[in-house]
Figure 1 (spheres, rainbow, N blue to C red):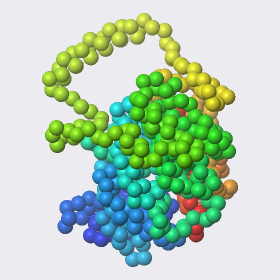
Figure 2 (figure 1 turned 90 degrees about the vertical axis):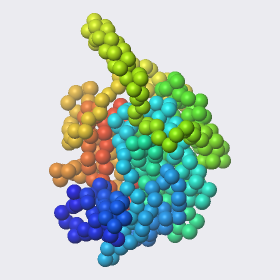
Figure 3 (figure 1 turned 30 degrees about the vertical axis):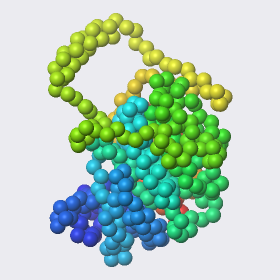
Figure 4 (figure 1 turned 120 degrees about the vertical axis):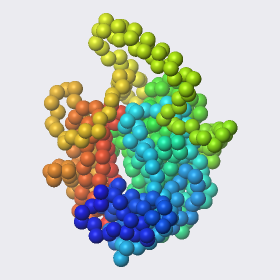
Length: 420
């Protein structure tokens, strides 16, 4: 629902219905225009220091027109507060989808990456660098259509200099090696998409470490486990795409247009009815399928009751890493229960490390008001979900949500500096 301290009820004819996102710079509302009979997402900026960045986001998004990019309807204002009115996208964010499913199939991953590649190739052909390709910035609709949502740090040739020298823009796990040298380019987006493809398909980050220094070292060396070891039946298309995307030297890295050629175009349907990503059922197979499942379930239950309790594990030896990675094959179910960080109760508890890369005085604030200095270890079980805010003097607050999974051990964040 609308935040109780917000005096804004309507922007450009759109009545604000509920707050669907919030951060240090402002809020995002689901809104409805009764005259146009249309829903929209309305972003309201509260930090005046970011007015130029906000205007740049609106300018770039208004200049693009692609089926996999959310449309910008209007750039408006409420008093002295700039507002962006954009297409409201129903569906599930890709990071939420990944949390729910653990990892995706070849077919699902190809369907998602194919659409993102199409949008990225379009942006790059127009000289636009996105700079923040990651699952949180995409939604998948119920018919399988993927939409790019956020252009907050996007850049084109007309973008004014909005970042201080020496300040790295983006999310660290998805940064390309050249970005640590403040030399981002279009192919930096390609690297990020390669990281994302790896993550969606395997459920693991290609570059993961318990501290930012080690993480940066792995990225700059291009050190990661071959996805074929984790997913033996990985499709040839995805294997090539990941391999050619995660090349340290951008000159040797595939371009977005070349990625589009590798992944292929979407197959044409014989009718206009879309095929959903999540389900596809046909009446003539439904009853036999249910009957067959019941028989298999019955015999499976008998076999299960006579089996010893054990968890199968695979040992993955990394050619380029001097350690052994243990991959638990047992699928972990996720939960929506929000918990507070607790000390480790036993050796079976999992831990994740939260850190702020560019702010020495950062603290983590929980919903109950308690705080901890960063870096901070959170302990819990697989599926435990944490909500928190990262605060540091001189930086914009960053609200985050993370879940303990066997796939990640650290969450390093870059904070946005005020007056940059």
